[in-house]
Length: 344
Image (tube, rainbow, N blue to C red):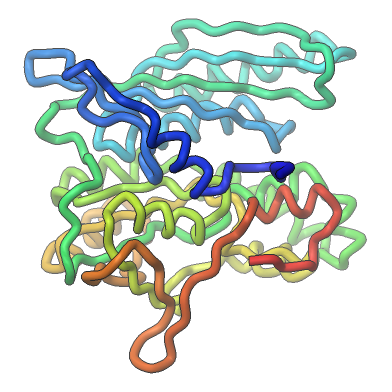
């Protein structure tokens, strides 16, 4: 079967990951569905947290995306992102100024988050038509404060910071303004959509830090490719529980609604870096929301954990329905020319 662009299907990935066996007792958390990073015991009550993530859809601001999406994965483990390595692959014909611009985005983004750029690799690669940046981020934290994503219990609250599809909305505006304009999106709306990259931005490092300072979250997850829908399914798999979600509680930016409606994509399946998913004890959710409000980060309770198999249910009472799965991110579908045909 030919694979579509984007993340591998969850069942295929689970099949391959099932063959992984760790013989090293220092591996506290290895690969798995819904896991943002690996956790390694380095002694002295400390843990090293490691992740890797490529940026393949973006061109404009690709260096900024690469640093932030990798830092987000570290923050979702309750750790502090500290060291970054970048492999920058450039297509033939790339001008020197573009290489300098990408490098500048990486160094500036690292500096803004207090991260050290410690290595990497840069080359012009045959066969590419657009730049690709593959990032590797390392972080550290106290072993007893690492968020392993375990222990979710019925009655726990599901929280979401900011709103959905920040990254995807900004990416569509930055990469495809002509298509948006042709679809009837105003120049002002396109500019505002592109501005979401910086405000509220795609980083959730501050979100995770504020939340972890106030409560002991059961789980944190960074919605990325496949949007919030995929992230919720991944969270269900990681916690081994049923998630009941109120769709009316999920905040969607006006710019996102305008852009998605115009080009026929669903914001629930659109790249979503910039929002943090969290599971906290039900009685701690108010304290968590207030801690985020204190640092001017919006947060809403969007659902609860229930006993049952890993699944995601939308709605309450008799008016419920299962949340569909997106076979690929909506932005991949848009780029491949079949936007408007929803297949989830």
